[in-house]
Length: 183
Image (cartoon, one colour):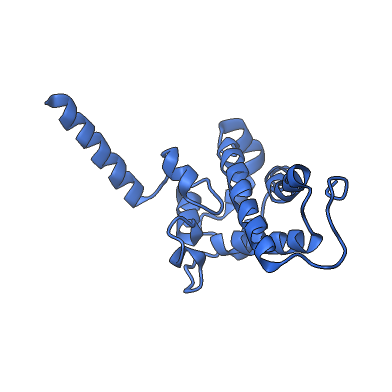
């Protein structure tokens, strides 16, 4: 399908800068897809019929990232594979090497998010809006909120962050709203 839209497979390989900005775009596109589909998979019938198997482990480990029903793998995988294909369809510009590197980095990201550890090299230590293992651990612990795969912004914007800090912020907002109302 990607070749239909103009995927390049020959030489020369794309410049590193081109690969970097395309992969960054793929992370944003996939994260958006992942947030909305993952959130939908937590709705009653979809959770029970598809997503519950992934939540077998409330304390995830790296390989638990890939422990899911085939339907879920297909749904969420559409974001991983579909993002570069959509990019290629719109721009006509994508090399297979970039796609391979993207899929490898996305897989590393999923394993890192399910590892249960914040390693010194984890991107969360350098990018404050990167989700990371602590963000996703809370999701597996509470089964709600923290639906994003890579970034925290969808959870922040749509108030689906979960965990003690998020609960504290919600309480503070509620108290401020009530205090304003009582004035």
